[in-house]
Image (cartoon, rainbow, N blue to C red; front, side, top):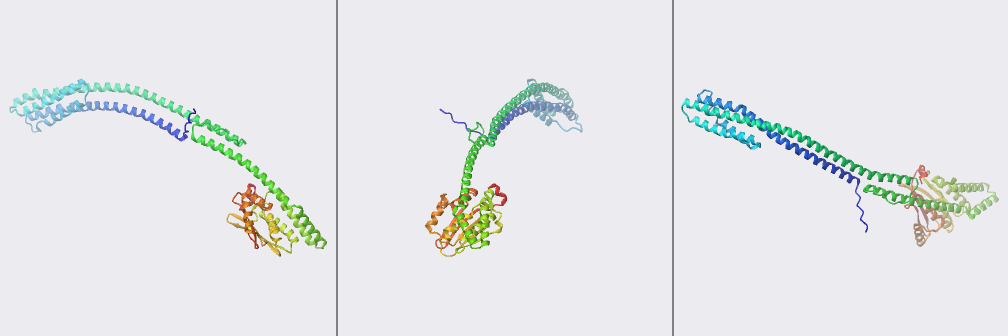
Length: 477
C-alpha cells in the first residue's frame, strides 16, 4: 500500500513556524524569570515595609504619648488633651503589621504591642476619671510610662526579628537568584542550540534543492532540454520552481523543434516560390518578346525590357536575404509589371501607389509579385478588353495593409468561399496565394496573412496585413 505524500509546506510558513517556536519558548523562559523576580520582590517588599513602618512607629510613639500625658496631668497650657487618637492609630498599625507578618517571634512581639496599646487606652481613660493630682501622677508613672516603655521594647523586639528575617531573606534571595539565573541561562542555551539546529536543518532543506535547480539551469543553458524527474524538496516554492523549469524546458524543446520544422517549411516554400518565378514559360515568353522587339527595330523598348528582366531576377534573389524592405518589394513588382505590360500592352495597365513612409518597413520577399501574377492570369487575361491592376500600400493603426486589385472577371460566391476556407485551413489552392499566406503567418503569426474579396464581373482584391516594424527589427523576424 502506497503511503500518501506529505503536503509540501512553503518556505515562508516554515520560517514563521521556526520563529514562532523560538518566540514562544523565549516568552515562557522570560515569563518564568519575571514571575520569580516578582515573587522575591513581593516578599522582600513586605518585609521592608514592616521594618520601615515599625521603625517610624518606635521612634515617635513613646515620646509623643509621654509628653502629652504629662502636660495633661499637670494641666499645662500646652496640653492638647488625651492622646487617645494616637493610641488607636497605633492599634490599627499593629493590626496591619500583624496581618502581614508570618514569622512566629515577630507575630508574638507585634501581638504584645497590640495588647499593650489596648491596655494603654484603658489606663488613659482611667486616668481621665481620676481627680487627685497625686493619684494622676502615680498612674502616670506606674501605668502610662511603664506601658509605653513596654510597647517600645516589644516594638524593638519586632523590629529586630523582622530585620533578622529581612537579612536572611536577602541572602536566600541572592542564592536563589543565582540558581535561577543559572537555570534560565541553561534553558536559553538549550533554546539557542535548538533554534540553531532547526535553522541549519531548514537551510539545508532549502540550499540542497536550490543547488540542484542551479545545476539544472546550467544543463538547460548547455542544451539539455529533456524533461527529468522532479527534485525532492519539502518546500512548495522549490517544487513549483522545479516543475516550472521542467515544463519550460519541455516547451522550449518542442518550440525549438517546431521552429526548425517551420524554418524548413519556410525554406522549401521560398525555394519553390523562387523557382516558380523562373519557370520556362515566363522566361521563354519574355525572351521571345525581346527578340520580337529587336526584330522590329524597337531597340529602346528591348533594352528597357532586358533591364526590367534583370531587375526582376536580381530582386527575386535579394542576395540570399529572407527579409527585404517594402521599397525593394515595390521595385521587384514594378519590374514584373513592366515586363508583362510589354507583352500585354493591349489588355493591361497598372498603378503602383505605396505610401512613402512605408518604404523601410520589412516584409518577407516575394509577397506582392505572386498576387500581381494571380491578378493578371486569373483576372485580366480572362476579361475581354483593357484591364487595370492596382497595387496599393497604406498604414492602418499599427499594421500595414497591402492590396492588389484588378477589374477582371472576378469570382463567383461559391469559388470565393471555397478559396477563403482553403486558405484558413492551410490547404493548397493555387501555389502563389497559399505560399504567400503561409510565409506571412510563419513570420508574423496567426492573426496576419491574406484575405480575399471578389465580385463576379467586377474584379478581385487580395489584401495582405502584417505588423508595421522598423527596418532595425529585420534581424529579429
